[in-house]
Length: 274
Image (cartoon, rainbow, N blue to C red; front, top):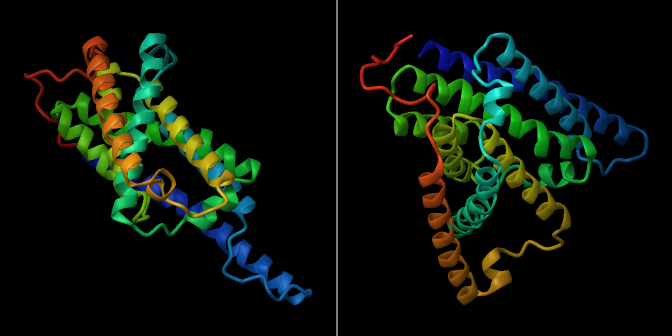
């Protein structure tokens, strides 16, 4: 398990290494603005462009570490081996799944500590690049390949690996509103990785999820929830239809996917406690 601890530690500490200076630099910049005639700028506001650039640097650096240390097992070959029809079928499945989990999250009324920062980042090019492109690639390589794949290849049961990586994926977000959503999404993305042996379906679905979130945040002028927008009856109907559609598509995908030989769990493999 030393490998898992190392990967998670590097992910968390490296993110702090890049983001803490960005926060301090933002605070310093706001103080300077206040001293030059803009006293209404709060000193605690984070500059979205500076923060986004810090996240870009973090994601690129983390991907480089994953490749350099060979913590990831993905190659161009494993990225390409999934058939296009199966990859495309993942898209409507994840769309229905996103709607269901979002609906449940709204009902739970969890506090979102990062909403204002995401709103600011959603309107900047660096913010869009890191949230929609780099973060999905980095997080899928980290949590699905370097963590879940490592556990698979060392003989742990499939669902134990999927749940473990999903839990870490949820916890690392450190935001009450994101943790349950990230955990649920992590279960689906982990299942896709297990059934295909490729991080590509997870990356595509992750990009789609983050892209939808960015568009929704950037274009929404109100704080209306899905229930308020659709009405209670329509919301319930939409939740039922989406749940059924997600289940049907997942069942179809499960019937047509083949386990990748490198991560198929063999009964005679003894778990490696490294």
